Image 1: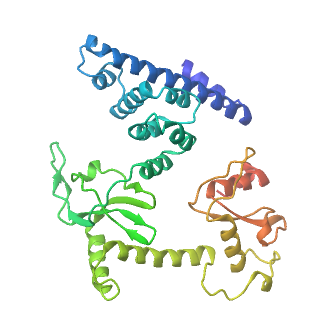
Image 2: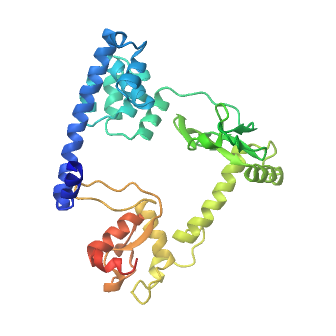
Image 3: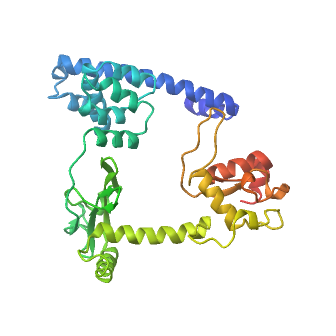
Length: 356
């Protein structure tokens, strides 16, 4: 009941105060996290887990502290690294680094490189830190392969098949500056019921491992495409084939969404950008896309720009409904979230709810 009352009271808090409270709580959480990691490191160093009838720090964290296995792994890894590099706890406490980032940096850190490496990693996302680690410690290529996964069955009364003979695994992986080359690192076959998300892992600068599970239909399409492209790709290289297919699809979608073309019919100077209709002229779409760099253009009051590239839409800064024209200066790219946000700021949430 107490928690319900606390949650209900939040509904009465103003937007600005709610964001301020959240920021303060996060800062406290980071400090507590750093203290927790420091304590785990000390307990681990003293081997105090043995007193609790557990054979290792990992078992102590999962069975006594009731942490999940991933939670235990991350905190133990960071705790051990911080014993050698104490500044990691400070960076964790003030938010410059997060657990996942430190865990990936730990194997690469030395007393000689830590100052430079940690400075480069500060404020970076997990993916960006993975790319940094790939630059410092590149992984070797692996041969391209498409392999069939074995039949798997779920444990339980029904023992229903989770993967039939018509499904295959496509392990695709390395991106190079001169083209996409998909090279995998083989892993044990997995049941569909426990399938993980597609893997995109940087191996070194400009090279990525991409791995996913493909259906029999996709496998058949790849083989048909390989056969049709033998004249242009004699060795049947899967990377080259997929890159050309993706490039062609990308060109079609960008032409449809952003009016991108190699031979435009008209330039900006040749079109009318007045608000005679809702149609945005193709030259304007092209100019806005190039200016905004295929990214949402929303910038908050602290100067941070939204990094989304998904579901981009053209937004009128001066709304079309209020007489805004179609000039590039009045139009920007925004993600769906910020397009709605701008509309709410302009018209109000209640007005927009009538159209939803």
